[in-house]
Length: 267
Figure (cartoon, rainbow, N blue to C red):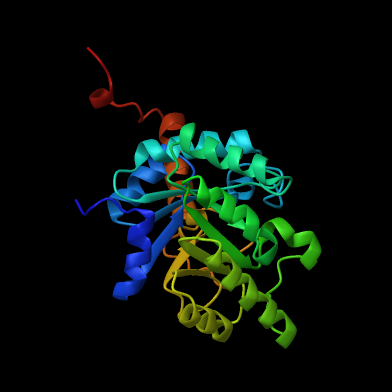
């Protein structure tokens, strides 16, 4: 098995020119499979609010729920770096509360880093969390916890003033001490500019090919979630169809009496 992935190793991967792979995970079984397959980062995303809980946005998921799912993922990984999303209102109210909640992800959830949305506005918060020894992954551009301010899930950084703001957000996150930064829903030329300017890795989702790495929601790339499919998603499998066919075969065999057979029975 390859060496354990750590936050410093993620930074070194950029220096070596190695692309970083990340996928979301929300439970032990998925984490174990993704980790064994060789993914570098398991992100316990607040996207679980949608793909696991059925909400229309990421906003309803709670801190306790996020910690619970992080703990499940951590049990399933051996190599990958486990990063936990800090959910809405777990870090915006005060720096002291942000530090306490970030610490809970490590002490109770066995996470190895946390992810915080926001740029310039979150600089002091990121600095404070990093200062107490907790690695932070930043997240700028289309930040899902701010969808009401954006008016929905819209690409950010198309206009010149927006582009400059996002660049300043990226620089602020790096200066605050983050070990990496997610760029979501921004034009690929802007993502390329940020990637070239930063010394920390950029991890794209809907930000084009020039980022240092990529992340996708695992349910999207495996075809397990179809409430909506963003343009940037590539579906690598259609497991929903596979599962539907398997369940229908099971129903048929139970109803016709061919399952369970003699080989599934005790004598």
